[in-house]
Length: 168
Image (cartoon, rainbow, N blue to C red; front, side):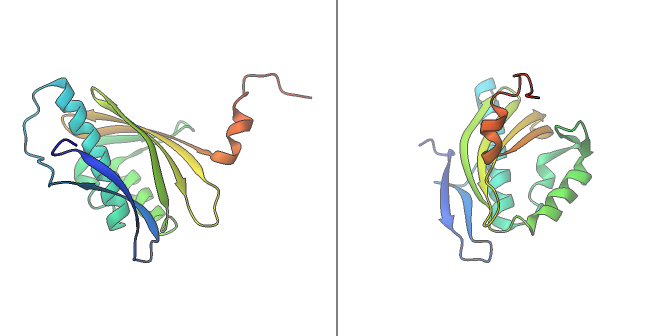
């Protein structure tokens, strides 16, 4: 593993939040290293997304997210609404209590230039499992935009043929 590469560990969290996803490094990340190539920029962007998710889950607070977002951050939703940095942080903060105990299983974390895509499955006790795809766009080392798609896993089969004519 690269010295600053992150790895995913699913741990049994002894706090009241239950099992959670966690990310760890073999040694502390060097956030001061200069970005010199497109490949290192892509890797740094990917690390920022990993760190943001890990800190959100581990701390149960949006405070670590705030400095990772640009002042002009926009969160886009499938219903064509969007929210500003402050609105999105408030919405995530409000969701933290109902999301206590959430398990996150990351299937893909892909980065290309200024975009990072995170594909995950998320579970809450007593709730349907969901599949989530987040697309993050970076500008000057900060997250500038996010698009998010959430689908209940149980509904996936029904949505596989959405283009077929509706039955009457």
